Length: 284
Image (cartoon, rainbow, N blue to C red):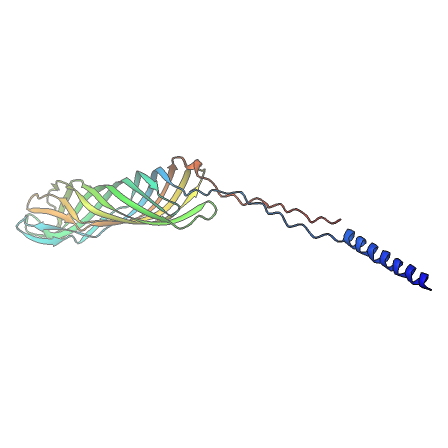
């Protein structure tokens, strides 16, 4: 009986020892996951010098005009009508892109010939009441410092708003004045020519538009500009009339242009981070 007890105890000890060994072989702790650092991506702010050029169409409006009737010592009288025609404009400039949101440039623009037609009332040389027809034209040269805020880039398109201040040299051609009687007689005075005047004036502008990436260093630009030019001299005294002054002008411009960015292709582009490889768990 004692022998059987000892044999049973030995059998149980062997069985328990074998179970522990099998359990140790079946279960192994999962290794700690391996983490790999994502590669660093450098995103460079857009910056640098650029050249620009623009062409456009200008819808022009004259605020009015007046002149001295009877010479410089006479009384000031308004034109009854005073209109200028639309014209084209071209321009060029140089600028600097400070970052992705702010840039500035200096531009020089030429506004092509804009014809003027006006009328006044007075008296002809024979004493009859007359209405005059006044013909002239003007051109404008504008030097302006501008600043823009880019409103973010969406695909290839970057909308912007901006403003500028500067000066415009407005050059009036000679004014031809022909007065004709209103009594139906057909009488007209001889045409009088007044010398045109030119002068620098304060000017400002407001802009809005969008640039489109054509290549990494070339951008197309489509925009609108409102330009205001202050009042100034218009024509000289002649034959008991003048001098005359305009009351200023403004224009609504539709513009198409381009910007060439130096070293634009050196700006790093955004790249998504690489996939992070994970080491799978190993089971024995």
